[in-house]
Image 1 (tube, rainbow, N blue to C red):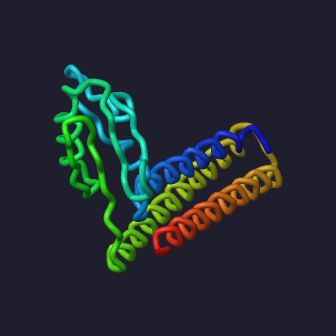
Image 2: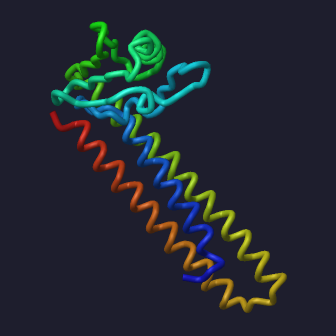
Length: 184
């Protein structure tokens, strides 16, 4: 791969990584500790990720258990989960917080699939924008560095192949996540 194309490859890969982390936070009826990734707890005045203030475990397929390292954090963690958008009410027994994931209804599964497709579409747009920026950069190179038209065309083709590869990857990820959500 040409060095002038590598930077766009890196940017497109970051887009894929972003989509992957987005998909991890979407719950599919099973307990997934990644739904807590974006939740921060006020820990001595500092917003701290839940994973850094307690032990997170999955005792059952549809339950997450959070054991804070300091009991004083129980209320803070509970409050942070309640104001988050994960849609699960925590239960606090004085020692641990439990999150029980309800079975997803058919309607909710379809909504989640729509959300997955929307996120996939947004990332495909981001990849195409990277391609556009790449094509602009290649055209500028063609004018400033006296690249031949064939060289410019070759770089544009290489960038297009890269774009196609990543678009295909997004489509696969969307399909896999949709299948995962629709599987009862």
